[in-house]
Image (cartoon, rainbow, N blue to C red; front, side):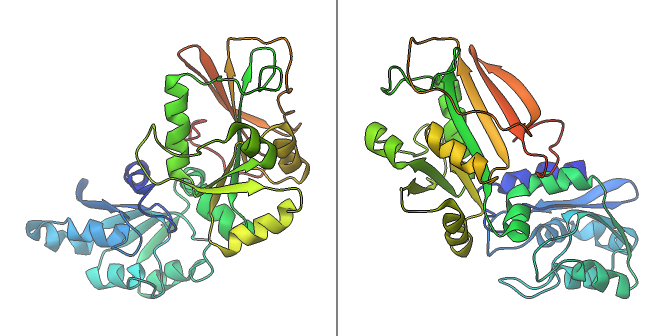
Length: 310
């Protein structure tokens, strides 16, 4: 299952809006096939895993176990049901990381496999598999995007210098910030930040698609915004606004993860950094060329793998 998760992460950009999924086929203590969901609209992880099995190993499938990080689909979407393919291939056993929260699945894939006489084990590395697809899970369960609050501050707790823009990130942390943007669907700033700083909000220091840009205005309630983003299929949102924008999300209890970067510099005055909510749980703390990034999650968010936010 750890290998399934490792494979699945390769689809972090291409699989969206589908979940990231990895599959590994094992027979006689040996991996005979593996794959992951590369791109939305193309073959799922199970399809790619079966396709990778050599002709010499086809005969081993009747005694094989297929490990899948997410429950195999049971419905016709852009591709046929993976549960049907597994049944057709005649494997003996299926090991599933976690149940798919999507309304068209939700246990139906597992039920179909068991009704076909296949042994199914569910919940292996369950929390790790849920964390892998925390965006997908939050979107389908909460009917809103997975929300990451993110800001940079000085060592003495300011996000600007006398209310003027201040470069706090270094080259490495800026690159990591743009990597994050490439992995999330949308990015939001408040109208003050947008008017004053004119941020590009692109991935120019990384490779991948630019997130959709959103500016929060005075007349746009956050709860209504969440409904709009859900209806438009936005599964994840980075908030990079100022203090007021961040604290409005915290007050509305609309956040799942917080990333705070602190640089070893100080200023005499400026806008104070947002206040952390009382219920944060520390995930990890890392140093990048002198700057420190601390990752927090909410109590309701899926548990991370070994404290890693990636």
